Image 1 (cartoon, rainbow, N blue to C red):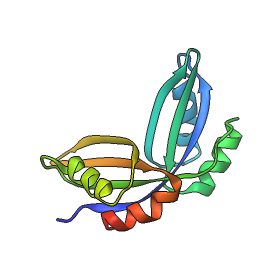
Image 2 (tube, helix red, strand yellow):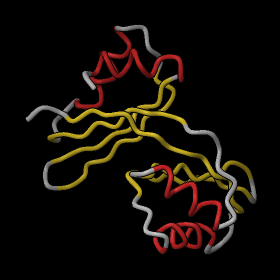
Image 3 (cartoon, helix red, strand yellow):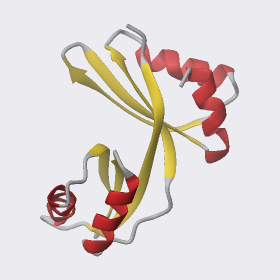
Image 4 (tube, helix red, strand yellow):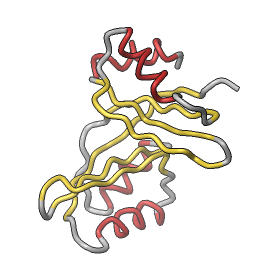
Length: 137
């Protein structure tokens, strides 16, 4: 089975880095019926965290985020890749991008269970279209 490769729109949100804040944000999105394709959270500096939220549908997400009092950043695009887990899956994708002269600024990858992997590749906005073509999206 070939890897599934598609564009992934995501938005950044800055929140206080304190107990329960991530649960509050994700709970508000859940309660509004927002399905997330991906989510990452991390500390940016003491007392502050950044959430990267990739909704399945952006319009409902934006409405729910505003209702929850979140200030969302501009839409960004990454490439989401999923497929059968195998040795070197991410290395192969990085090599294709490098051979095309595309710098990858971040990668987030995990084994997804049941013999599958998933990864998000982040490139400069000017390179998204070219990277999608190189990877076969």
